[in-house]
Length: 75
Figure 1 (cartoon, rainbow, N blue to C red):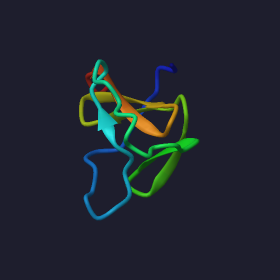
Figure 2: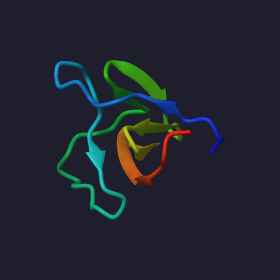
Figure 3: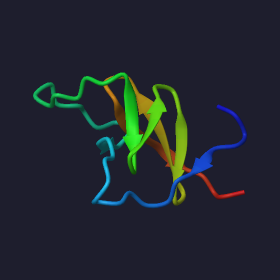
């Protein structure tokens, strides 16, 4: 991860945002989440991308979901 992480703010319920899960939360196999990228407020991000949503650090994981990786204070 680079030292600069894009700050995206809060998800807008009117825009497309991929599901956000806690780091240790089990992903249900019933969910049809197969995607090669993650969305946040209609913007596409590649698998492996990190974002800051407020102080929460999110990571785009395979299947196209965001996973919380803890908190980070804005620089």
